[in-house]
Image (spheres, rainbow, N blue to C red):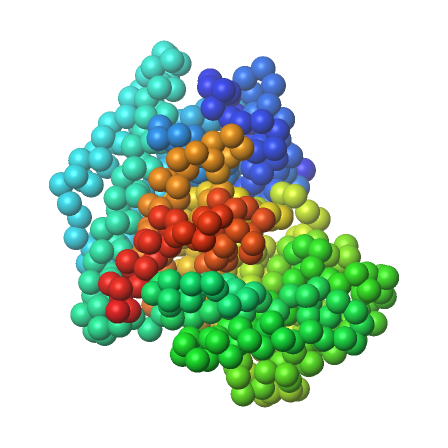
Length: 477
């Protein structure tokens, strides 16, 4: 076990124990190593199982009030403590410069504003390094450098998205991307739905479809699928099996300790549902959250076996069906909260190496959603995440919902959600490997977090729905 220690001049900028427990390190090969952290007397101690160098990630406040994940550069263990604020400034500036140089060499056109912001960040960082004899001055300059680098990164991503989308649209009038939303019943205002989406994910909750063993209730789902076909919407079914939260029917829970029977019941359910919709639904999200788990205390090997059995059952019904898997917390936050050892991409790659065949990967970006929230990150992190998963050479779907409001700050939070949603959708559209973007919450009844829904309680549209309708007109109209 190794320890990396940091001197913290502004401990007030670090939140409570819940956020400190999410601190982790990213190794050179992409592995995520959790850290046990302890903050005391102005020192932050990070204990890890490995002693290799790695980039530390933690939540940090911006000047605009948002908290998002920031990075250090790769740090090695040493006896002397690092300065946390200085290392965060170094990490954010290095990250900005590396991506700027990479995109510039590929043809990105910068702007005077971006160049000026990068210079300002450099200037603040130099002040932080050269004024170490004056801790207050050095820390203030480091914090300013972190924020300036973050704002410059946002602007860099805007330039990238604008130029990439301009290039893609010059080659095709309409982008080959589906924009959809999850539904479990026909929307009250179907016209409003169709003005924003050309696809729908029909919810196939096991709890709702098979409340009692062997007794299926198809009526509501049949009506929804028929409506989607009438409106000529692309239909994605699923998830058939959710391993991230308690979505199993009550009658099955007594069997969760018996893997043989659990796999048998799972395969039977998948075969029944896929068979019921043969010819009507050709794309299925078979399993969600297998990389993290949470249901029935299944370990990684057991979840892999369950995934393999479920996919095999779907293919036995229809060999040509398109199968996707959803990866939750794709940046690997769960590794600091669970006993899992495989990072998200390692989990999926292991399945592939074991011969499990699937056509697409769905990345879950539900920020702040229960039960396994994705931490808020900037668009550069999203770009790098999509690029990393693109190495698997499979199409990618993005499953998202806007960030939920912190307790007590719900009023006016929609003003923060709208630009976040715009930036994320734009970045996804700029990536050729992304073939679908699906929103998770249509209305209050569908969501455990009403402030993330696209409709208000009275079924009037929220600003997020107005934004999606506007983007749909621009890119698909």
